[in-house]
Image (cartoon, rainbow, N blue to C red; front, side, top):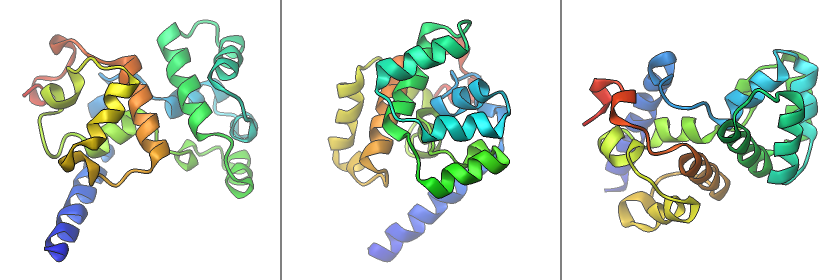
Length: 182
């Protein structure tokens, strides 16, 4: 049984990698905190490293983002602020790498990425995830069910997923590509 579960996890990981490799296949979803941070850094490795070294709460991160990009809408600001408050600051070695090469891939995954990696392999992405309207507590509660409790995510990742989902869902069916609706 354990060996079978390991094989299933490996298959899910491979499928997740393939899904992420599709890149823009999920552009219909609102951007996650990591993508928003990359936008705020404007491709400047120094700015990305400085942001990764900064510690703040959600309110402080929201104020910081508004000062940098007043054109971002409130949901984008809140999505970024929740991500940053949960995931930053990073360790010194990651900050150094970010400051040197500016690769946002070194940042922790955001809620959008976690949803793409975890949700669509067991049930419909739309009816099982994108169409749900829950607050953060409701999204966190999904991990209490037996079939979700085994999902390999840290508490920070679960909180990141829950905050992104609460802020950005539900999506209207017409905004979702037909192949992901049911």
